[in-house]
Image (cartoon, rainbow, N blue to C red; front, side, top):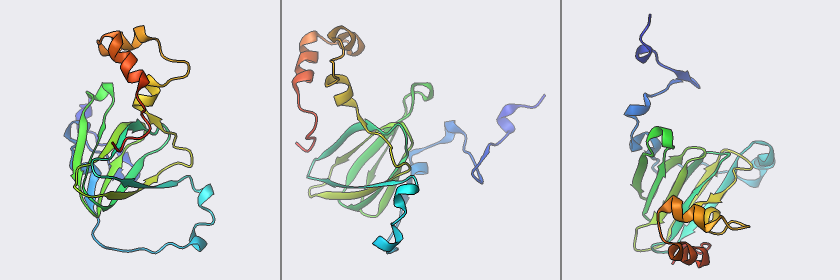
Length: 182
């Protein structure tokens, strides 16, 4: 018999790292100042390539609230500012938090389907570009999904899930979850 721990998995031309040895740096890179120009002539077929792009501006202390993209991985590039970012692995992986403080020209990857967030921890505005690996990544803001569902999720379910009094659930259901820059 062979001991499975001695076999390496080869994916996309690279050896896959043992999940127990993964760390936040495995999802991080500083990119420096290399510029690649892309014009509208080069983007005519973007719709057929299965990618999406987003420009995200953050006011001081602004938050892109915990959310997930069920159909795509995101890669975030910081154009200016300082952000605290992170994602949480699945229950099977122990709900591990991978987080990092990013500055200008830093890059961070948010794997497909995992809950992630970005918070401006700097004193000024921050700006980012996010590239997504699907034309239809989907977006689920966790607070909206739980407290703004239509029809509403039963208060009994939410009070038991969070182990809080119904008055707290009522309060959270009345909050506005769309403007996270306050």
